[in-house]
Image (cartoon, rainbow, N blue to C red; front, top):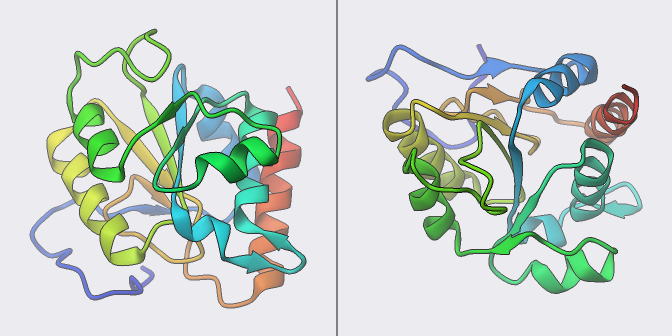
Length: 180
């Protein structure tokens, strides 16, 4: 099992994230979801992977998988600049509180989401939000696309040390999502 970037209490629960490092497996989980959602955090605007920003990969994933997007913090402007109009704009705590409610109608009013992908958050804040969803949103599965392992997610990437490995995984995910 991978170790999280920050020390988190993973001993009080019996569930830990399934470590996913195969783009085909990630795409399969996303494609199975009826109402996925991608939540974009502010760190996605500053993290570079090679020549591209992380947010550019997230936009490609959203477009390839036809996934609604929730912009948090100040990410809306950059998403629009990249040609993607977010379906909603919430503070990270607001969206987590909405996701906990099984009666919430989702960002498009079509029903709550069954899979939520997260990318671009501080690891400490991400782990706390994912812990909240893990314990208070049993109707929901979560996936992280950041380079660190998040034990409170349902599915998490392992700790990825090399940018080229992370880049290859994200590009592979985009390609897998484009195929039917």
